[in-house]
Length: 393
Image (cartoon, rainbow, N blue to C red):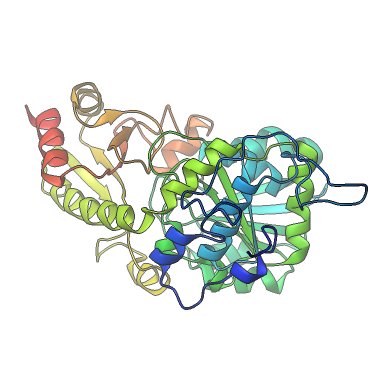
């Protein structure tokens, strides 16, 4: 029987394809009992055999076997050194931003998720950090905003909700030229479609609430890093802040990962059909979808990803049309979040991006006629039928 705490024997599984790695994970099964479903170690503490003797586990705030299995599996899938599971995506980002020191400068995507925006503007500006929001799809704009104090470049790609695509490899090179870290929020595409660390990024973050869990039944965040220095930072964050993911939620994510490939393929196929249908609708004035060949960064998408994901944003002709659509969808649910089995439609102006100033929202295009839809796993004809009825009847 292999040592339970020895990750090195399980750390890569390089001979396996992605879906096999996702299913079998790091240890894959319980090495004590052989249980095929990895157990939920619902314990706060662990017994020591004697003074100075440890099983490798001491206290679940520090390390827990169920959480560790999730963390190691995510490191394998993202092709990183070490993974960390947090109590939410926001908790993951908070721990990430504690890398900053007073006076440090951060570049972020201009239409970044409102929760990430709040962390910067409402919390870390108090500690003397500065934040600049730019169009990351424009490399010249990235270059123009780098300073000798830039410590971090935080990328969402595709962006939430405008679906802009950043060149991860090119931006990572620019970051290294000034000694900055490149962070990529990989929530929308997951490691199945995009692996930022292999493109030069230093850290990958996920709201694992979304596609990683995949069933709208748990709140979680994931960080994966590519260096021991960064790993040490996040170990300290978990130990000190006590924001590690609980065993049950860790188990739910482990279970979700086993079907990640199947789900992402279906999200991808369904979204393509729905996006194409939306473009045919008279009341829809614009569709934002990275899988369109006329998307401004389509070539970059093809270069760095193997799929387009399940996210679409679109404008309708009037606020009244937007209101009617939100009020009349039936199978589709008007709800925040994304990445689950169910199709969810969201109104970013007052939901995901309410923290942004109204002037900023208008400039970005997050207006009163703007909607975002997370395409689920239902039959695509049923999704389209529901949208058609809500829009046109």
